[in-house]
Length: 325
Ligand SMILES: [Zn+2]
Image (tube, rainbow, N blue to C red; front, side, top):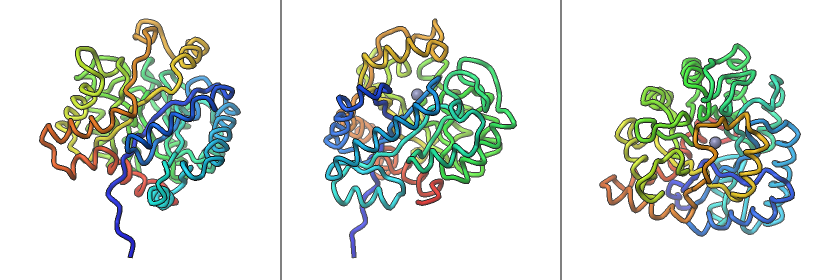
């Protein structure tokens, strides 16, 4: 009989460059996750104002890159494949999409994204689209957005409410049939930024059975301490609010900071002035993962609670929500 594995270490959001030509030079960053003891990482294949075809091209390019390195990586489409990858010493990669805008209301695209390996998607990225409002405007969930949620839940793509307007996020949770997540969002009470979330939204997400991932960007963590120290503080504050079974990591590490700057200038609508996006981006690297775990243990959390936060909770979401778990 094969021995059972401990819960995986799982970072639920990371950002490769969106320029295809720049991908090969930066995807080697994935080795840094493996060396830091991460078992699963969710890679973004598109966000904001990017077009549908650009999302498809990103997924295909990353998949080809991973497939050419089968000894080190695996694009995991199921919980079983994650387990197989771990037993073989490979990093498991899954995909995510930041915002439903590129679907342009066509729900058949949900299945296409699932086939590509997408396992969570935001309803909106910062701005209102056909489905829902974003954090930088005030808009709710549209009837088409409700249909999208239902299609995602059926397909096995987890509904993520990060970057989504609070009103739309609460409306989504009111119709949830499966747990919903906030893959990379911090508490507003710990750092006051429009991208961060209210206690009320965090509690409603947890009540759906969901998980809130702490974001490792300085802009959403605040000042006054090292990034990894602040990540631990944000994790502990969330644990105090929603309990250790509803907290995880969504560190949002950017592989190519220069590339991010050109993406931001090409998508000015997604990054309104006055919200701090102009400042140079500072992000928590995968190498911080062991220190984050140590910080949680030294704060007095039980080893089982720490294992849940480091990835066991995302694993539970996958088991519960992915249709091919
Ligand atoms: Zn994001």
